[in-house]
Image 1 (cartoon, helix red, strand yellow):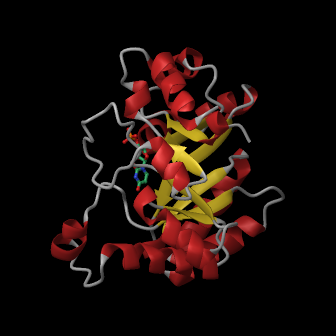
Image 2 (cartoon, helix red, strand yellow):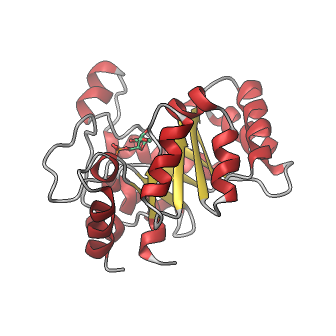
Length: 233
Ligand SMILES: O=c1ccn([C@@H]2O[C@H](COP(=O)(O)O)[C@@H](O)[C@H]2O)c(=O)[nH]1
């Protein structure tokens, strides 16, 4: 796989038209992420459009509900022919198992990956706000391991946790890492656990999710090209 194909760019825009404009601005991006903002505003039409343009799709709806509900949502999502789909690991073991089982009924199911801990959360947030009495790396490791035990294909984590998760869950366990910021960008925004693209790949990330450093850049094409260059494509 070309290194450029390991970069997933989120379509974090409010309308179908804005999404298409971004896709057309960045013709070399092969993997797009559709998240809550766009899906809630535009519905599944954007998925069909991306498929028609031969793009791969990460449907990042981050399901988090009781087992019966997430299983139903996964069954519905399976009809869209997307490549990746997310669920929060904290929905629990039974929800992960039932979601995976529901997807397995489909002919070509998307890979289900579990959010271990949002990259916008720090150790402090985990301890003081969420009251989780476990160190952050250990928590993400436990969430990833539970996802693996439930038959999921991989996890979403920050690049900081990637190496240890690969060691524990195996090289085949897919790791998708947001919270990626090129060294030229000092502003991390709402992301608390960040790393540069090159270091994230070295740490074991299979895919990098890179949004604003590309999409909000003055020249998104140049920003994407610079990252690909940094990664050595
Ligand atoms: O833990 C997570 C899970 C998902 N995301 C998503 O990734 C992108 C990151 O965008 P940036 O602009 O590069 O910050 C965004 O769509 C999030 O919903 C995440 O950041 N962290």
